[in-house]
Length: 113
Length: 117
Image 1 (spheres, each protein chain N blue to C red):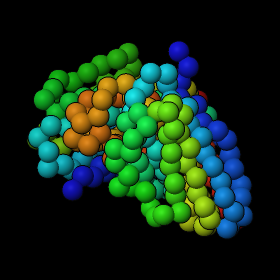
Image 2: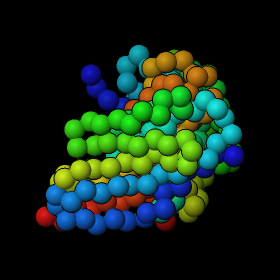
Image 3: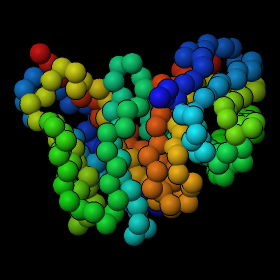
Image 4: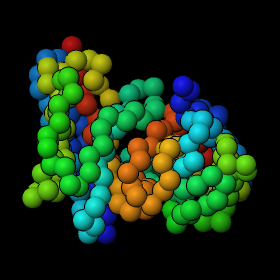
């Protein structure tokens, strides 16, 4: 069965600190996709990244980076030099052949100025 | 390009009443999805349209929920009669590629916050 676990319910960091949000997934499919979404206080879900199961290269986009490790079924998200605008709920999600997304319960990040 | 829009943004109704939520996907997106987040829990899939056809409605909780997508454009989700446990945030998402590959990225709307009293 598919499952996404975000063990960290809430994290608080002081501005400019680095923070890593953990995501562990379970799937029996060999082809699958992993996603991260950001939900700012305004409520919408903002797409951040999509990775497929065949591409384990880490990705960096500005202050954001993602570490995909199939050996540990993890897809962790790191924010470097955090800013107040990074405060949000972050969701990790998995899709298999059926396209619908399976979400984790989200991690609420608060960046303190 | 306009994103996914949802209406209303908030709805407060009494148990037993009917509520209809609307979603307008990104123009040209064939795939439309409904999800729901009950407070404190994960966002859960409800159903998936490809154009006007229901591709997968395995997540619909019961027959009090009715989704339609007439003409393959906007979609409505009706809850009748509403129960207390239906409270939550209802998200709509759309994507461009045809389903079946899991490749496409789903773009979400801001959600409708439903409170059933």
